[in-house]
Image: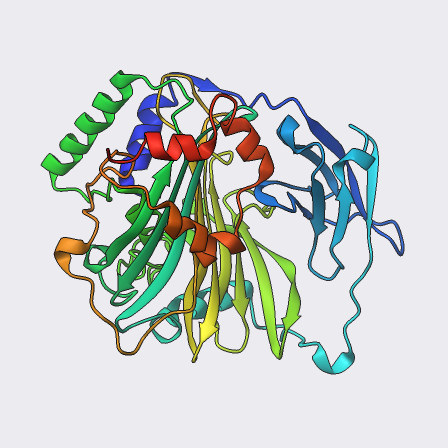
Length: 422
């Protein structure tokens, strides 16, 4: 989370923190089908819109909130060592549900036993030390699809979609070196109540931070979402989450960090260990690392701050021995008015194609997005034919519930045209 977001949060949330008032929910327990024992920290999410999720506690108990539009959706229940279970929400009651997971059997030659002296702290330390070996350290480009949806209670109030090309140099160098070229952008109307006072406040805070010489993250949300994925823009700085000192994962005597081994899974010939961490004991699993035992690479992680007001998720895939982002998702409070709380959120997601490392046509500075350029403006023309043929959006279609919520007064295509350059 960049310094700008942190500052805004503490200035605004302390004044008027509203609670999430979603009315539709289901609750119950997740248990082992074999012996009815609780499945600790099972993960529940909506199949077609996984941004809405919940985590069972150490007793297997869960309470899952979701917008009313998702009443016909499928909820997926997942836990390491068990087969995924898919259940229609319509078949569940509001309370008293017992969701039974079937154990996932592994053949003996697939199981990797962790040595007794191989502590979780050592695994995390090796993962941080091996960032220079496991992540890009030369120029590469990624074709990406960016989508941001904004919420207000159980309604969706804004949509921004962009097709981009990201050109990066190294995960060990400062993030301002990366360039992002915008291929096309479209956006819906703004259905939320925007207070101009908040816009002025945020601008004044940025000016104040800049005047002190402190680090100032990009105001361009597309660049910011990519840059702050945990490694990019952090690995070069020893005092950040994935910096070489690793204070945030290891803790310090005055503020210890607790760890909990969540289990392991076999993917191909690799054993992936999942470790939860938190300043609270025991960790509830909302923040975790997945580490490949073969090369100590972090293949997936999620970091949550406070009570979920901010969350970063990233998933990586290995290409020729190097890990590149496959998906990045950031959740944060939407600070557009004084009604601040987790009912108003921005959920920004990137999906990426396979990286290109050879025969790269460099992005020229004049063709790249400016770090302080506002994404949501009417400076961009709408290319409807581009979006009809764009393969990445076909792989990640917009959920019908979001479409229904945004199209109350006008079709999305009409809104895209209205908010494009004349």
